[in-house]
Length: 189
Image (cartoon, rainbow, N blue to C red):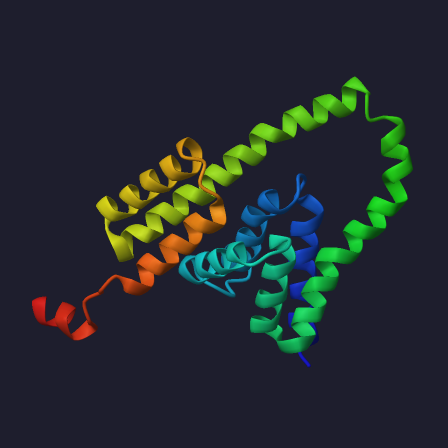
C-alpha cells in the first residue's frame, strides 16, 4: 500500500470538506483544485465527467465524488480514506459545535459571516462553470455549448423543469447525437 498516496487522498478531501462552507456546491471548486491542479489525478475533462455523473445520482455530491475519485486513485483503501476524510471531520465538528451555534444563531456576527461567504461561493461556482463551458468548446464548439447552456437555463429557470429531467434529456441527446469518427476527422485534416 502506498502510504504517501493515501495521506495525499486524505489531506485533499479533508481540506475540501473543511473549507467547503455551505455544503456540496461550495466544495466542488475546492475538490477540483485539489484533484486537478494540486495532485493532477485527473484533467478538467475527467473531472467534469465525474461531476456530471455525480449530479445524476441521488445523495450528497461530495461523498459521491470522494468515493469515486478515491477508488480511482487509490483503490478500495483510497475510496474508504477519501470518504472518511470527507465525512468524519464534519460529523465530529457538527456534533461538538451544534449546541454552541444554536445559542448564537441570531447573532449579527454569525449572520454577517453567512452573508459574507455567499458571494465568494457564488464566484467560485461561476468560475467552475466558466471553465466547464470553455472545456466543452473543444468537443462541442462554442455555438452548441452556449446553445445547450441557454436552452438549459431557460428550461430550468423560466419553464421550471426539474434538474434531473434536464440532465436526463442532455444525456439522451449526447447518446443519440451522431459524432464524426476519428478517421473522418483525420481524413478532413
